Amino acid sequence: MVNSGKKRTSKHARSAKENIPFNRKRANIRIRPKKQYLSNVNELGCGLLSDSDSSEGEKSEITPCVPCDVNDAILLQAPRVLQTSQRENIQSVTQTIVRPSKHNVNLQSRTGYPEIPHNDTDYFSLLSDEIILHVFYWLPKFTLAKCARVCRRWNCVVGDRSLWKRIDLANRRVSTSCLGLLLHRGVQVLRLTKAEIIEDGFDGYWKGDLSGFESLQYLDLSLSSASTQMMEHLFSSCPNLRKLSMELCSISDSVAKWLGHLSELQVLNLSMCDGLSTCGLANILAGCRKLTSLNLAWTGLRQESVACLCQYPPPSLRKLNLSGCRENITDQEVRDLALNCPGLLELDLSDSTVITSDALDSIICSLSNIQSLALSRCYRLSCSSIRELSTHPSLSKLEVFGMFRDGTMEQLKQEMEDIELNRFPFSSIARPTTGIRMTSLWGLRVRENAV
Image (cartoon, rainbow, N blue to C red; front, side):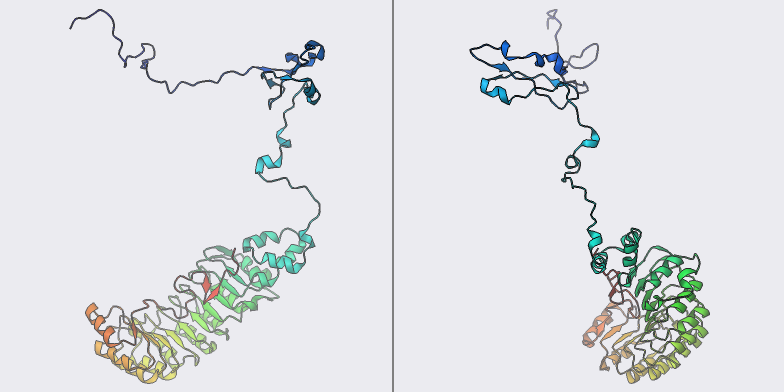
């Protein structure tokens, strides 16, 4: 191919200076807007305009320039010719155009709401204490604490006991002084699950007048860091406790002694507690004679402790959990329990590895009103002894987890149609919260307002 001698320009040719293709847009080039010419009012000569400069035939004049929102300056705009009848509506252009400051900007331009005129009248103070109390009822507890700092009247209204009946302090850090203030205000339901209790002394409300402490009836200390000293002060100051949960807490004989002074106690949950001795259990059983539900699961009870419970149980006991005793509970203890406490409705003997079919015979003969029985992982019980429970007239729930294979379980379900097998893997005896109800204690809502 013959070269014509002319330099061919390709569409991908690049500039020698910038090395950028000619036909491509330079995206990184900053395009500046055209400069607007600004002039002052005096420089435009608007003040020199008069009727003598216009022709008599047309009697028209040039409209002055309209100022914009620019400080001390206006934009040049095209003039407009007006008729004579329109001259009277034209106002003279001021020589200085003042831009409003930031402090004078209208409230509506900042927030979008119309400006509310200031008025010195406090309409909230005109309300009665009963109406203010009803308004405070729907506020969260931390907001009530802030309202108490507003004035003396609000402080008196916030201190009303009707606002502090139910308190939920789960997963929070609580000092003993703050706890004493809450008890002084008449708390009835108190939830301290997984709470970290800081001891800063037991002065103030803990000494002298204990008015309000007797109102506490429902208390949940499960998984909290409450010390034995704090428990002693708490149980000695709140004698009207009815339902108490101390799951996974450490107790001592002195704490158990104060528990024995709670004569009105009906429900007690001591599952997985550490430090419960035979002497402490005897003090509890001797003082709490109104107990209806007792949970002693996995507390490490010795055989003499189990024997003490089976020989001297509270006469009103209806629900009992003794799971985890392993070899410390035998057929003799089960027989004594069935004879001394015939009104049992629910009994949990799971992980009792030494009981045999003789224990089941005692249950069938003596516990005529029993409705729920848990025998999970009781490996010395045979399948034939479990079948004999189908003859019990009132038994409706039976738990036998980890004892039989799937085929045997299916056969038992067909033979025991009137009894529900393996429906509840965990016991709910004396527990404050069951299932998905994590904000309630024994069926009572802890958060009574909707906020």
